[in-house]
Length: 215
Ligand code: AP5
Image (cartoon, protein in one colour):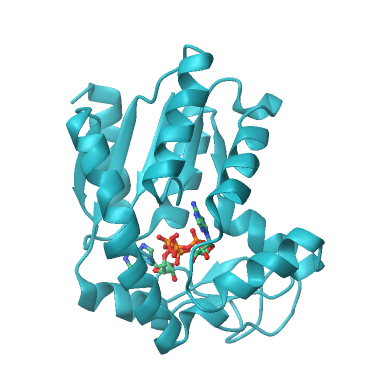
């Protein structure tokens, strides 16, 4: 199964993706997470990506397209993948299509998490991340000891791009550059629209029902 998880910053893509990987035995492909890992390790790619990410801007298309091409060729993606936060521009969507056409392996579904702006701001403001391992915590996924990562005991922080100015910019970039990708997929009849304001479990169940029932 080949899926795209689509939605604005904070809509819950990263939260839902692991359910899909587990249920369908597919790989999670998250450019944002990969780039944050690179930034933590201060690789050349990470240093460049960080300058865009901390301001809430998109990383250039050629970087993302190369990253996706490489990642979907890994063995764990042989049975399929869920792309979390990609494609985010029309050139990325077109490049992905060309890649998949060449493999005769088209996308099955684009799962669109539609979330109100008020809920997005609340979720992003309440997200805490481990600077060491990247694990995410919030009201719905709380840590055991307040402010401390369960896995490695490191103090949790807020992502640079979860600061109010960067959040505003990310939402504007989403409207300007990423929303056209949704229309692109609507024209192909691939979009399944979900109410992303619901609880994590309600959204998960709605996705599973649609995918298992073939809605
Ligand atoms: P990326 O990491 O992809 O960030 P994003 O798309 O902005 O999404 P987020 O990670 O902020 O949110 P999410 O939808 O995954 O929500 P989450 O599940 O964490 O990208 C970061 C940056 O990398 C970009 O700005 C860009 O610079 C670069 N980048 C990445 N991909 C790129 C691309 N293709 N092209 C160019 N640049 C790219 O949930 C958010 C919070 O809400 C969490 O705390 C969670 O616990 C909570 N939550 C989740 N679901 C629910 C629920 N149903 N109810 C209550 N709380 C919930």
